[in-house]
Image (cartoon, rainbow, N blue to C red; front, side, top):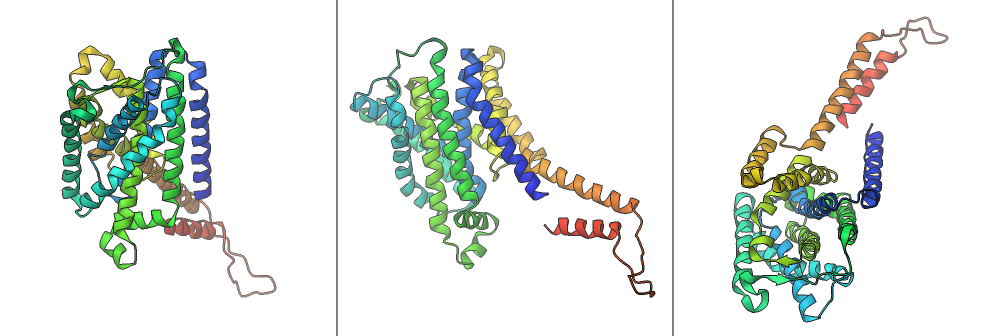
Length: 365
């Protein structure tokens, strides 16, 4: 059953990848490809956020600060190095992500000394500190006036979105590969142990401090690369736009909706919510109610789907399989047959016995 489930997940992800690769070639509507670019950007950011929050249990509501730091880093690099619009800024995206990761090391070392609600509050404080620095360090960030990234004038019409789309898709695949490696490595097992019981994990020899810090930095690096692509895509960045608190809520909601702590959950959550968000923002009648709608949706997900769509469907499927096994067991008669060469009426296991045994083994798995 597990092998079949894993095969289904792999086939589903490959099919989704195939659709993602060919999508810009079959849809020439620039509005749709714009939504697709934003979806990939926030999908990658959610996958990175999930490495920290989903695998360690440390819910960060300020990690979008590294998203903004990388956007500013790319803009500053392009201005100082006189980088022109085109493909060149895409090669600097990992550099911007690395800058965010370096800044995340001392920040994580400080905030990870606390746990639970205190950690959440400190990450929110980090976010607002980054926003204030962007507004007041006018010599670096140009303050509230903002910074402009190079504009690729050679890209026009329906082609404009395609390079951003594939750049974001490459970073998404990298983020998924990192998340898969973490989830299936000894390092990832240590993170899951921290999530279940940090004190016990520490007693069992898990280096909790370095492990949490590594997850914090990896999440910052992944989100930073997506922030750099976002900044280049929107062309102009401001403290209020790039350090947007609704981004934090959106990323957390995407992870919780799909299934926090899973590999495919953030993908499903982003694919559902980001297009819906773009639709709401495109409607003048609903635009002002966007934060209220997002907050209400967050509460609904937490109350009705606390584990997310993927884990909930997995639980329903397991229950269905066990219920079907029990029904088959009740319908079949136990076969009683004398053993060959013996007349003592010894009993061979019948189909019902085998089914009951397999059902018990399935529960133990």
